Every structure is written in structure tokens, then in C-alpha cells.
Image (cartoon, rainbow, N blue to C red):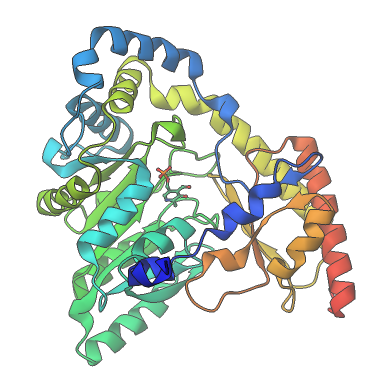
Length: 411
Ligand SMILES: Cc1ncc(COP(=O)(O)O)c(C=O)c1O
């Protein structure tokens, strides 16, 4: 049978994630991987979670083993509302402004399904988080690719594009700007307050929504916290958050916060997808954040990542710092830095050499929905040890030298 002929247009377009393909070799002996973007499993509070799991299975089995509401566990929502008050000074969020999702990845998918049509426009960073690109692409919208600079999106570029849409009478089809406000994946950069305010101004002027994705905000090692875009414009911002980086990604729990009408619509989309998020992990997270101070608990993890970031910055400087035109971002939190190598270096092509030299990174071309900048790569510093970070960078330098020599590129 010709299965291909039975596929939907969307399904025909979908490709398997190149990250998954590339990282199949990550566990080979002796390999040092800067590829994986996952938290360090040793940081998961497994004993505390084991204890609570036992308690809720014994005492709350009528809830935790049963279907729940699509909106999500009220206990978890209550706990999250408290966190927003305590840590962000946000005191207006009610149950109706919130839906619990299966990770932020589902939130991105639901937002795309609820807001985008084939002829819609949405503004995204260039480079873009791969998962957002795949989620939004399900609706085949037209992407406005906004360059990412050291302090967030290039809003002058965005404004010029919005003005063009206005002039051709298409501005009402521009639905939202997708922004990772803190410690961008893959870029490592944070949007400054001035830009957050300017983005809100543009959203008001051209009447669009902002989708603020903030999985890493709590993982700040240095610098001052910047108010969320949501706190500046709660009426036009949909805030996505997740327990993946502050508790454990295996729980698969995210949260969408926004205007009541939009949350109701997103909840209806979710109902069609999965009826409800898992009752068991929702109650587990709810009891965990009731019993423990989430942010006190992750303080050691933040310290650990911060120290590894410092080691990574030092290792890049020492090993790659003299390469012509090299540039890398200096994250104040999160898991990633983004390296731009001299023009002419194709990091996807170079990947084979890197594998032989036993060092892995993610070629930048994975993070574009238009013609990629092929001389870029994403580097994660949270999993390798300090020694592996130094050794991995030494290996990467050997790879770059060898590749550049073979291609006749001066570096
Ligand atoms: C920017 C961004 N958004 C969303 C997600 C999805 O996270 P999860 O589905 O685990 O909540 C990730 C995961 O790495 C991410 O980096």
C-alpha cells in the first residue's frame, strides 16, 4: 500500500528532529557532548518526589488515578498562583487565567492551533527554538524572522516588517510575536527591559499578541531579574512556563497564563488533544511546591550551572578566542551559549569531523525556518563536567582547525 498517499499535507512536510538524529552518538564511549539541552538528572529531587508519590497514591488515589479537568488540578494552580505572587509580584492571576499543559511543548502546539491559520503571520526570533518552529509549522503560517541580537529581538526590523504588512492591508493577519524573554534557547541572550516595553508598545500600536515563553527565567546565575513581558502587558501576553527546568521534565507539566477568553479557547483545543494533563504528576508537583520552597530547592542547581557556565566561557576564550570574527553569547542564566564562527564554516558539514574527534554540538542550521546561518552552533554547558568542558573545547578547536584547513578558510 502507498502509505505516503494517505498522509495529510502537514504530515508530509514533517521531518524528524535533526537534533535527535545527531545526538544518537552522544552516549558513545569517550564522547563529550555539548549537544543535549536537558537538565542534569542528579539535580532532580528524587527522594522528596518518591515520598510524596507514595503519600498521594495512598491517600489521594481517587483523584490521582482518575481523569481530571482539562483546565488542570486546582491544587497545582493554587500553588502556582502563590509562586507568581511571591516571586514576580503578580497578584491578579485567577484560576480562569490558567491552564495546565503537558509541558510547554504542548502549550506551544495549542497556541499555534488556537491562533494560527495558513494565511496568518507570526513573528519569531532568528534563530528560533526548534520545538516552537515545529509546533507553529503545523499550521503553516508565514514566519517573520526577527534577528536576535545580544539584548533580544531586533525590534526595528520587526517594526519595518509590521509597517509593510500595514501598507499591504495584511496587518490583521499578524497574530503574535513569540519571544523567549530570558536566556534564549538557542541564543543564550535575555531581552532587556527597554525592549520588552517597546515590544508591548508595538503590540498595542499594531494590535497583536505576545507569546512569552520563559522556561529558563528561574535559572538566573547573575545580573538582575527583568520584569516579565506578561507583567507589563497582561492583557495581550500569553505567558508559557514549565516545571521541566525547575523540578523535573519527566513530570511533563507546563502552564499557560493569559486572558480568560483565550485560556478558554486554548483549553477547548487541549480537550481535543488529550482531555487532561496527568492527574498524578499534577498533584505530585502541587504537593511538592506546597511543602518545599521551589526556589530554595533549586538554588544549588543554579549554582552548579552558573559555575559550569563560567568554566565554559573561560574554555571558549582560551581555545577559540583568537579565531577571526568569532563571537559567542554570555548568558546570565539558562543552559546555552551560541557560537558564531567565521563565514564559510558549515557546522553541519563539520559535524562528521567533530564526531571523529569525540566532541558534539548542535549545528546552528537546526534553529532556522528560513535560510540558515551555517557558521553557527548551540553549546550547552549543564551536563559535562568542568574537566570535560575544557577538554571538549580543546577538541573543538582541533576540529575547526582541521576543517578550515581542508576548506582553505582563513581563521
Ligand atoms: C524555549 C523552550 N520552550 C519550551 C520548551 C519545552 O519544554 P517542556 O515541554 O519540557 O516544558 C523548551 C525545552 O527545552 C524550551 O527550550
